[in-house]
Length: 139
Image (tube, rainbow, N blue to C red; front, side, top):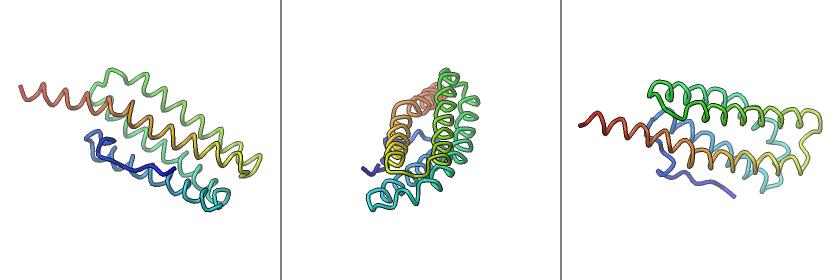
């Protein structure tokens, strides 16, 4: 199942929104490779990319949260840390087991579902907080 970027995913910060789009594109590329029977070939590169890009993206997002004094920062950072650990575990499994069909399915589903759910549910709260601050500043 491919994920379609919609404006409802935007939090209103260009850098973060563009990084989210990139993450969804990479996830969709993996899902497309899986549907074409090429998931095993694509999985290692995708998981390595996600491990590196997640660090970069989460750093940007956490920096934004600190700048706007986002009240949910600590809990949000824990979600990021947990996801990074999950991706690193997946990378370890890939290195030890190789890219078998079970692992391909597990990782592609996990990454896609987590990412979209996180953007829609958790990152949306950051956007709402920024809009609230902007509204308070306009008064």
